Length: 459
Image (tube, rainbow, N blue to C red; front, top):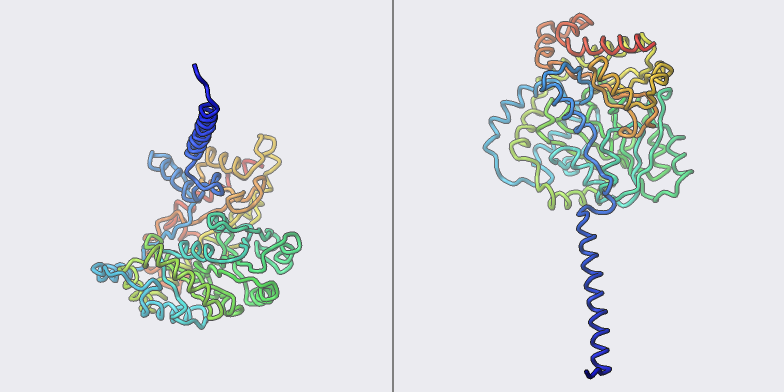
C-alpha cells in the first residue's frame, strides 16, 4: 500500500478539523445547558409575589390564615374610576408614548394641589405602572444605583437585571429606618463608586411606613447635591400620608429628583397598571432616553386607562372624599397594630403612611434560640405554623440580615369595601376607634391578637 506525504497531511488536517468540529459541537451543547444570561444565573422572581401566591393557595384549600404578607390596597377602586373606565372602554388607538397631554397636565395639577409641587406636563411620562418606568430609567442610566436597607423588594433586583452595580445605604430602627447624610457618605468612603449615582427613595416607605419631614429632606437634598446623586423619589404612598402632610423631595431637590407615582395605592387601582414619572428640566437627557426605550418596549400605557385616569384626577371632590376616608381607616389600624405589638415588647416605628410596618421581635430571641430558630425566615415559618399568621421576614428580600428578627407586616387583609362604607356612614366628624376595627376589619383585628398572644406565649 502506498503512503504519501500528501495523504499523511490530509489525515492530520482531517483529524484537526474533526477535532475542531467536536470542540465546537461540545461548546454548542454546553451553551444549551443554560439559555439565561450569565449575570442572571441566580435570579429569582419577586419574593412578595411568590409568597402571596403560596399563602393564597393555602387559603383556597380551606386553611385559616391571617395574611399580613402582601401589600395591595384593600379598598375598591374609587367609584368615579369605574364609571370613567366604562365610558372609555372603546378607546383603542396607540397613544403618545409619554401619555396624552391632557392627562399629563392633570397629573401635574393634581400634585400641585395635594403636595405643593410645581411640575410641567412636557416632563411627564405615563407608563404601564411605575415599576416598569423605574426599570427603564435604570436601564438607560449611566452610573451606579444606591438602594436603602430596608427597602422594597424589587429595587435591587431591577438594578441587577439592568446590569448595574448597586450599593446599600444602611439604616436602623433607632433611626426610624431613615437614611442620613452620614450613612450615604459612608458608602462613598468604603467603595469606588461611579461619579453618577441614582438613589431610590421610597417615601412613605415600603416596608417600614416611615415618612420624612421637610427638615430631613432639606438636609438630604444638600447631601445629594454635594455627592452628585440623582433620586427616584418613589412617592407612590404620598397621597396615603395619614395626616395629609406628605412632604415631596421634589420641593427641596427639584433639579435632581424624578417623581414616581401611580393610581395603584391611593385609588385602589393596582391592577390598572397606570404609573408615571415626572422629570425636572435638568434631566431632560434622561427623560428622552426613557421615552425612546418606551417606544421599543411598552409603546404606550393602555388607552382606556389613560382616558379614565384623566376623568378621575379631574374629579377633585370625589378624590378628596375617598382619600380622607381610606387614609383615616389605615391610620386607625396602624395605630392599633402599633399599640398591640409594643404592649408586649415588640419594637416598631409607628407608620405615618401606606400599608406597612417593620416590627422587630428581638425580645423573643432567647426563646427562639432554645428552639433552634436563628433567622427571621425560620421565625416566620414558626409563626405561620403555630398561630396561622403569614408574614414576610425582613431578611435579604428587604436587604436586612437573615438573622434579624424583623418582618414586614402589611395590615391590609380586611374587607376594604365594608370598612369604607362604614366610615362613610359614620361620617368624617366622628373619630374611629378599636371597636371600628373589631367590627369592620375583624380579620386584621383577630390576626394581630393572635400574633400578640404568640409573642406572650414565647416569653
